[in-house]
Image (cartoon, rainbow, N blue to C red; front, side, top):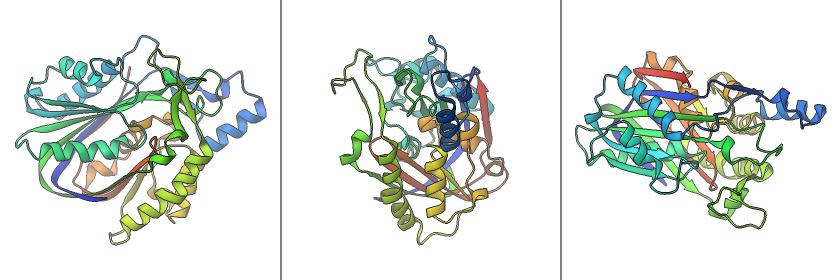
Length: 328
């Protein structure tokens, strides 16, 4: 589905990450040779992991407060808050409500929580932009990210070396002449490739379920669905200045980049330093790209994973006023 958004812009992005660093080379339950192969394949040695007492709402609030302060945005100007996460602090009420309260946003602020993972930033950016169409003179706050470390099985070599914890806040405003195009899709029959379930196959709410990931199916999804879908989406568009992909793993991202015939220098990464931070990977990678603050440019975003869902965006983007990464 190809979709268009006009007269929206990104004012700023702030990502909150744990100060604590965890290194894959220090994992003592992995065989040394397997460990070396894993680090090489996933492209990750350093990860960030939250404390057991941290809340996702507190990270989101820290990032959002920093963002609103740096962009001189009063809370009364926020008309929409969208939280995209798979690891909210509780089932009821949703975590988005807690964030609304902590930020002292108006009672009339439309507040939603969306359960999505790797493609969540692209889907969330489209969703919040559409919701803003009915709210003239208001801005939107998009919160994306997960505490993935909370849902991993102990000593699972397929997930533990991959995932980090992070939460990003993105401020979307109205006006200007930015033109954004989106393509959003879900391949539901592949949904079990990344899923939360207990050993008996049931998905309980008691915390016993852990994340299961089939790397081969995800790579196949990337090559057979995401690559041709993105090629078709971009076929009539000018070459972009930068291509920002969800930071899944080095082997997946490198394979997709090569299939799309993209030069490495046009595909910035955050994977090696911060790991796979779920729906926070794209805004975190954007925060590390100084060029986006200096001049108008065309960028491509692409998220893919849990669902199996994917989304692409071609943004004619005016300069972003503020980027920040804050450690907690």
